[in-house]
Image (cartoon, rainbow over all chains, first blue to last red; front, side, top):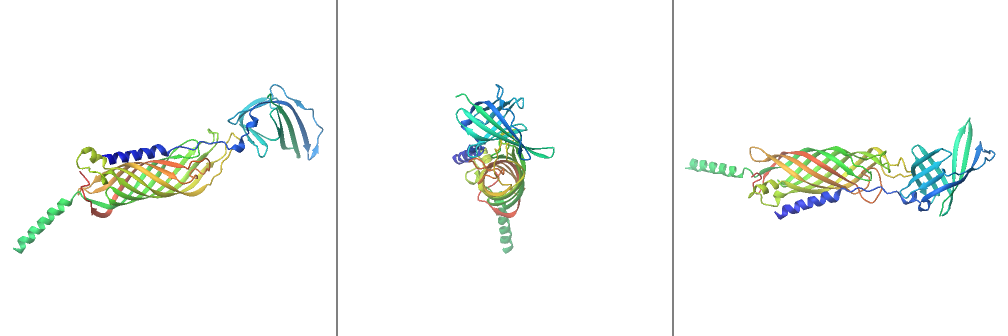
Length: 149
Length: 231
């Protein structure tokens, strides 16, 4: 009789230890704890190139209370933009080694180069390449965000 | 006188033969099974999928069996839309394995109580196998988190350790030989790799479990056992 209990115990051990999944963990190279918090847009400056020729600079856009980024610990992010006239809830990834930042919300995907990052200030560069009437157009947006310490 | 002695010898031989009934069994079985698979992998959700098995068994005794098995089936899991990682896969696999199976009847006396007689067909089984993975569908990238993607191979082969527990009902013929075995079992297959889902991530290796219902038929090699198989 003891032998049959040994059988059953072995079966129970096998069943209970078998089926555990690997929880997905975001790799470290897509996270950046320096970004966490709320960043308010100070100003945005744009440069436009048509077929490689620079257009005259436009006036910088001064950030309002509705222009900000929020980065959270689980890679959630919020972008509020008066340019897009919308608030986007989505996710971000930040590659520290490559100094890149990407934000995605639905069909919207924005990629930035992070040119400066400190406790109180972040500078991002967004490059957009399009075609207009057969001409190659490049728009480079320079963002300066401030964060209250 | 010689005729009388010969007649008596034939009669005694018949008696002896009758006394051996209930001890005979077939050493070789052929069978099939159906299984319901669940894969526990790097994908975030689990789905049930079907499989079919072909089985050949060598019965060293009625309660000690060596089983060769070929599986054809599907494994699937994950959800590219409803999970953050976006991991989703469908694997059309083939697996070959060899198992040794020990039933309780080999180790204990089952002729003294009804309960022990019923329990004699409980078994545990273990072995080794190879699984050939072939992803028919795979998604390794997140729809939501930019650049969140995993690596992996669409085709691979990996060793696995099958461990099984279950119950084998025996159906006897008119000679009290077990000629059909009906198997109800639960099998865990520990894959010695991380490509069961075509996604390489995390630290755990992949596992798939199976609820199995099968039948084996004795096809020959009849020999005798040391005690009655049927009580």
